[in-house]
Image 1 (cartoon, rainbow, N blue to C red):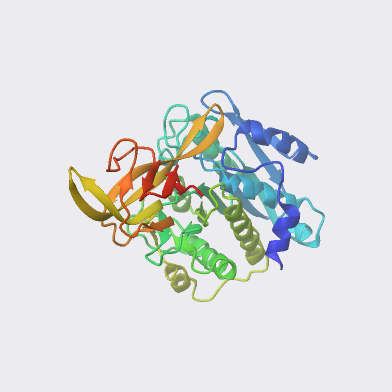
Image 2: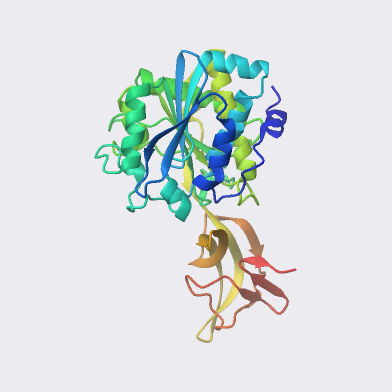
Length: 384
């Protein structure tokens, strides 16, 4: 199967970028609602509708939800791309619809999506509310789980640009986790199904992004929804959409999440389960915090008249201003920074740092500065 071509043919062109709200997807949902597949299954704190979209008539039931964290939209885009595959009339679509019933919640946290925040309108992280169920969005998801009784759960998220694949210098473009179901992180039948499936997905993705697939930490926390659903006996996969170089809008990562979704269901439908899945899963390198957005090396800094050659780093803050998302770079670290990488790296070759405030970058200061007499940096990037 040519997954690149499949993505190009089915990419949903009406949505793009990082800021994706309920208002962004409602016209699309209504367009897809050709046979009463769309339902309102609850309301957010601010009384925004939470939608589900159900399609397929197969006996294997798949529950997928995205934007549990409102500012994590990449998997929502990929989910709509995948729904386009299911509706394109192809042989693949017919096979998947005959094998599976898909129950999708494309934005579980519409209030957080609107304000571009991780939390909901009550400032609660829904992914830490699976036991107490204090929030209406958490109760909606749990009610769906109890009534639908899925055979597999797909918990769809984004992760920050700080994560790399162990210490390889490669960004963790896509990461996975088969969540633990107990403190001992044991592997039972349910978790093994998720592990084997992730191992199969990784085999596929290595053909497209070799060395850029990571494995998320599996520390047990029953307050997390994935751990809860795994403990309740439903094989659960955590997807984490991460960074691909120069892809801050995550349109390339979107493609790889799409590939992972398609691969998941072709593997399951063909019963193409990998051998030695546990070993292959554990051989996926773990995520590690090793990246900054910007890393400047061998810079001459002036500490009250004392010169020092060192490194410093800057990181984007994603700031929503009048419903537009801006990536603004600020200084976050100064020092040796051994073992860290930058998605953008610049060797100053001992050029002197200057800015309008003096000769020293201050933490949380906007990354606008000069290195030497000719290199001007605006919002972290060199201005040509």
